[in-house]
Image (cartoon, rainbow, N blue to C red; front, side):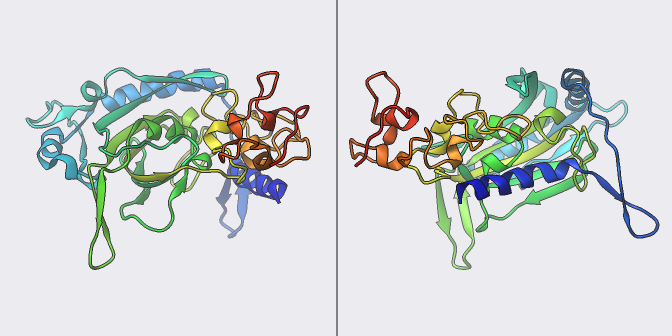
Length: 315
């Protein structure tokens, strides 16, 4: 069952690397996409983002006046016209985002930018492996919107299934402080995490084109973090974010073909493997302390039992 689950995930992540274009006969032609060097593309993307941030401004005063009730639809980003200066009550994006954020992904040093409008007043923030109720609007630098979600619904997003940039940005924001259910069933959230992320293509889809997103496109996402829940994808008693053994903020390798965090080397990452050390004892049954947390059972050699095939235990 877990292997099937991983295979489905792998197929879903790799399907997008095939780009097709409809031809005049109603069929589809496969479009060959050049695989560029990640470092060189990152340099080009940073130049593009710098130009964008230096030529667009947002309605900072309006958002400040709205206060903790502000949401993504209140964020208005406008391009400077020729010879125009930033209007009063607005702020140039480059001045607002501050220094770039840095991370390493696919053996590449990446930089990206985040406009922090409201960190959020909730008592917790999601991890990179959690499921989030989030509103968002994704656009290209020319302002064209390729995806959006403006109303909370019953389809929250699992951060392990989205682009890497989200896993770098969203955990730095808190969930909403509170919410109220209206008579019509809609929900109002108060003091939620609110911002805009400006991502290079290497932290988004890179050479993988999508509907409305050409290959090698830097992307812009307005987002509002409402709620989150901790994932345990394989139900082994270990939260998925703790199964990131190399602490790189990712649960799969960068090319999605092998698992980085795979203790027993069976090709199944620990977060989808209910027997992480391959000793025949399910991880959840290696909780000899009975506290519901197998990570607390440290073996004689200092390795938790659930990661050490030489030390087995059972409830």
